[in-house]
Length: 112
Length: 113
Image 1 (spheres, each protein chain N blue to C red):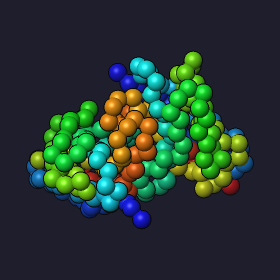
Image 2: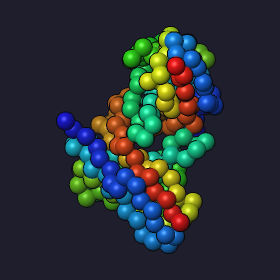
Image 3: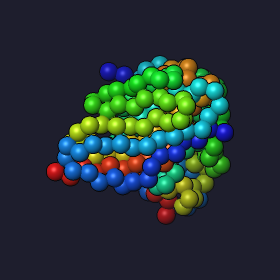
């Protein structure tokens, strides 16, 4: 079946540091890939997505590239801010009907 | 603006009681979902619906039920609450198709004592 594996947190960084969160997946065919972000006390918000191999999703300074050869969708940001402190979820959608399979989430804490 | 709302946002209930969590969306989306979020497990799918009168079981459906009598609402019912069902519950909706964005509600924190 489908599965998503992402690095465990928490990840603690200083402001302006470089952030990478690794995400790999297992799925048949060509899934769509997503990164969702959850700020404290809130629901999940779509951060970015990619629907086919080699696509790059980007939003709010975050980027992720759909790598079919390594079945990966790593999230990166060049200079994090305190406001980026949140839990980040990698997810895929393979089945018809738009059901998401999530990774376990990675908590990121950015310190001033 | 269109939105998805959940109620109650916080609830404490006793073991064995029936509990219903409401979910209402104003996007006119056909697809609606219920997930639970637990530490170390990410989000897991409980039930989902592709339209009125359609309901389907997800990976953790035992002890839960849903009904879809209109497009806007998908209430989640815990028939007899158990401590293992203490969790944060998220409702979500989307248009059909595998690449479409799924929109989440703000969550319902449920504690079963």
